[in-house]
Length: 323
Image (cartoon, rainbow, N blue to C red):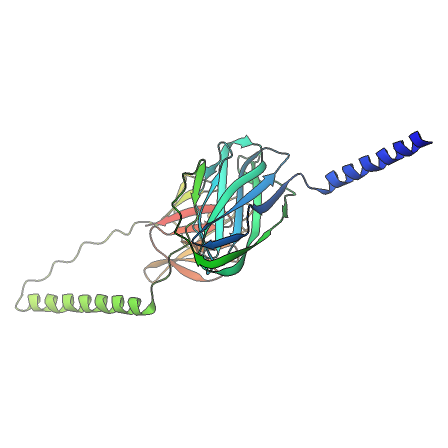
């Protein structure tokens, strides 16, 4: 009788262990921290952790933070072969992306992310989104299905007592800068700059009029100016390394094959943006997707495009606009 009872008990324990293991997804991403109390100027270090039954070739994460309490510094991944892919940063969100040419096992720390504590406050970090990536049959990056985000929020207490600013660490692995965008210039500074430009242009006009007094020779017509065609240089995502000359405007960019430029990316919608010319300038209009110009979000509006502007569509498709 005792042996039967022991057998039944062992069977119940085995079933419980199997059920617990099955309840926990094989593909997971979560945040951890060694400590949650810091002083002003100290370096806050958190870990982005992940596990996957499938070898991965990349991962991404977006961590929301309070800019009044924390400033992101960098991230580093020690997974062999994982290379940092710098992205334009948004104030209040640390956006990280890593990729590898060969599949790597993920079972532990994917990346360590560092912030500087700015002042005394109660704050938290939120794992807003994250993904593990593999290469699909077409050779493009594709998210691993069924990834579960666990332990998405970490709370921190920052003491107002300040310590000396910490020297930069010698980090091992692929380091990803997470510097937020600079604060915009004040309206007074912008007004002063505009006034100086106006005065400079006015002075040039007066000097030109004085030089032309008494001149009778007819001015030669200026040669026709050749206006170069705008072009896009794909820096990351589908068609990386390709250049597209915008011979036809407006130019629609999106996931649908009928667009002038098709970017087959799961985070890009069918018609994501359009680029058009107006009043001797070029503009980009967001059509409802996730769009950023130089790290600044564009929401269903037309924004001027200048040569050298970096545009991000979705999570990681990047191109540089040039003229």
